[in-house]
Length: 147
Image (cartoon, rainbow, N blue to C red):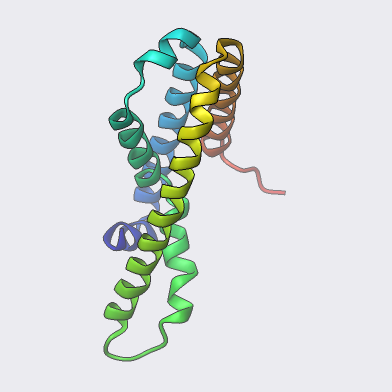
């Protein structure tokens, strides 16, 4: 993540590439969600697929790199061990995120069990998730206009 942050910070082309690949991936996920049948969604998703999708979304999300570039450096100070402090803050962030997302996953598993019982609710949630992904992908892909 640190190497990607430096690359994105120094290269506008690399930042744009990651941004547009991320937007395309969000659009792809959204269209897939909108096209899937509720019954297929219940039976076809394995935890490995969800994990891979989550990793891909996080790696292609430029906001995580921007967080590391803008927020963490203000806590580093100056000196010879700046890299070690950045690594410590990064690892602390990763550990806290792991705990937080593990709790989210456990809660999602329990809610998922309830949703699996009602195909109509499942389809509505798939449509909502697909619409949100498509909307976020379009927002990320469309350049902002100067005011």
